[in-house]
Length: 147
Image 1 (cartoon, rainbow, N blue to C red):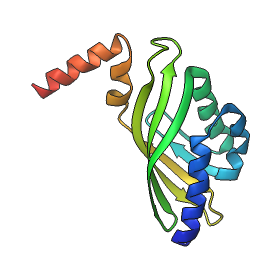
Image 2: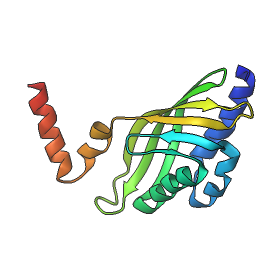
Image 3: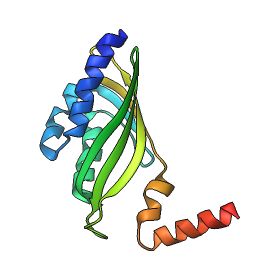
């Protein structure tokens, strides 16, 4: 796949990620190959049904989840998206918007759909430290490790 074709595909993928909503999950096959692989700090799955379940769970577990892509690097069939994932907890502080910063490495198929999707972000720093109770423990452990 040529870089110019990949850039056009990644532009469409980015728009879809940034406008992701429960109703847009039906479009997953437009952006992922049937046998696509997805991996993040909590999941490693293959296939559209399994990837769909991950995104469905996101909408069940969190209030107003959304991605903001801040940077893109595209080279041939490889792309890297730098993003902010913004959301509100449903069970804890429902007022404060939380932000997780991370990136996604995408490998595209010849047709421009995602064949492999790997998310990189620090679950300890970006998520666990923000949870009541567990956050205090994580901050204490971090201080102890740094002393």
